[in-house]
Length: 73
Image (cartoon, rainbow, N blue to C red; front, side, top):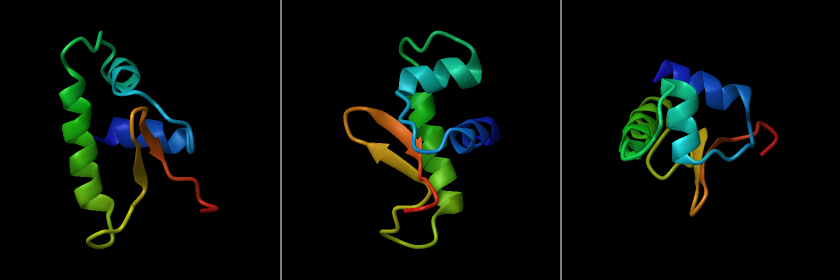
């Protein structure tokens, strides 16, 4: 989880596909393993969100992937 969070924080505003995140963080081909990214993003959101319904720091870009929210939002 920490490596995923650190990677996203170092690249705010950039949308990454699940396959790309899996490859960058775990260093393996993402074939069939993108659910790992989904699970880790969910766990990070539980720890980082301030309250129910809050967008939080990690945003889902539907049909594209995930990104870390830019500060000037």
